[in-house]
Amino acid sequence: MPKILALDTSTDACSVALDVDGEVKQDFRIIPRQHTKQLLPMVQQMLSDCGLNVSDLDAIAVGRGPGSFAGIRIATGAAQGLAFAAELPMLPTSTLAAIALRIYRDTGAEFIVTALDARMNEIYCCAYQIQNGLPVALMPETVCAPGQLQLPEESQHWTVGGSGWCYLEDMSAEVQQAVTPLEDTVYPAAAEIVTLALQDWEAGKAVPPEEALPVYLRDQVAWKKKDQQ
Image 1 (cartoon, rainbow, N blue to C red):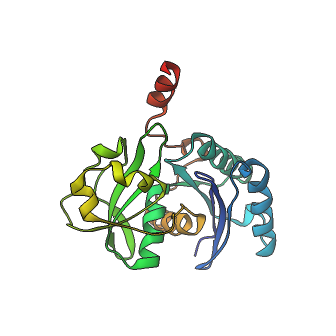
Image 2: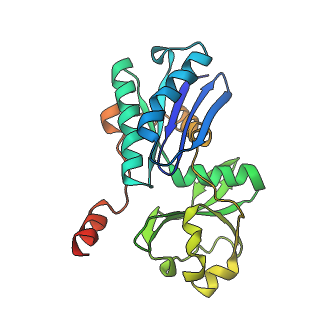
């Protein structure tokens, strides 16, 4: 089994996970605006607790977005630096899929829609069906106004989670009737990212560090809108 380290700072949560021989250990913290200071010490502590060095790893996974622009860059930059130094490949992983996997693990739901607050009255979202215990996307990851969200036809009922569902009242009546929101906010976390990354590792999808790029979905649109305000 490969040894994979995973990092995520795409939201207010900051998390590090390590998969060693199929056992996943995680350090998960809600620490807004502290990611830059806390992430690498969390990595160092995780490796130390497991008696490993970065060079002992097989790959580094990272929550590649969508999410906070600054947050995604923090985790990606840290992961790339570690990977370059140790000559390791990387496994960039969807934060929306990580949320879907967490929801499945907590609820057993088969059809899931995850959404993150994209600010400016928009959401990042994607719909998934669980197959063989892992989320499979039923639509492209997208950014849209809450009222523009359309659900796939694969199901009439969806379990939903993520910070973007704070806009539920702004969504269409059809969407509101088809979804069951979770009471607590579900964050993307490194424990789920490392599970998804293992699947990509086995499928031969690891990439060199320079190819492990963040996914913003609307990087150009966001800055244009900000300039117009």
